[in-house]
Amino acid sequence: MSLDARVLENMYKSEIKDVLSIAIYARDTGDWDAIRDCFHPDAKLTTSWFTGTVEEFIAGSKKMKIIRHEGESQKHLITNPWVRINGIRAVAEYDLVLYQRRILDNLEFDFTTWSRSVAILEQREDRWKICDRTNIYEKDRMEPCHPESVPSSFYDSINLDGFPKAIRYHCWRNAKVGHNPAPNLVLKNSPEEKLVRDTAESWLKGS
Image 1: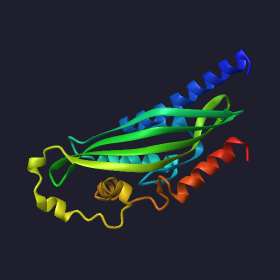
Image 2: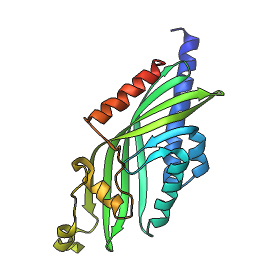
Image 3: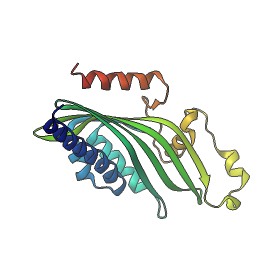
């Protein structure tokens, strides 16, 4: 690859990484216009609680933000992006860690969820934007902020039946506010993960 070609490829990779980061930052801050600008209008997303279009995702995210109580917060951490480009097509994969502070039955808990995102992107009109983004979930964790204040009866009352074991606390927490697991939620080492990766590879090759 020539020097000029490497410079152009690195410029494109930098643009793509910016798009990925902005989409995550805008989700946490509620900057809905910025989210729209990171996705093509026909883009699809799949998360633990959602599958559908970017406009539907924004509408659902707004409702989640309204539900959140004072003292609650969330932050996604994006890291280790791997970007591959073929012409005007690209596939990006990166680690995603979600940190949440939630108040449940007047008790404070911290939740951590680890996942891997696979994004399909396309350059249209000289702009790289996301066409499809799927989170592949790995594991989660729930910790009381003040362990001494949580009665054992609280843990006894938790019903985790029906939630995927790997992220059962994450899904249980979401269900508490009306967001049940998405029917096509993708877990690590599942057939669904293989399909996501095979689809991304086919896209990158132009299939």
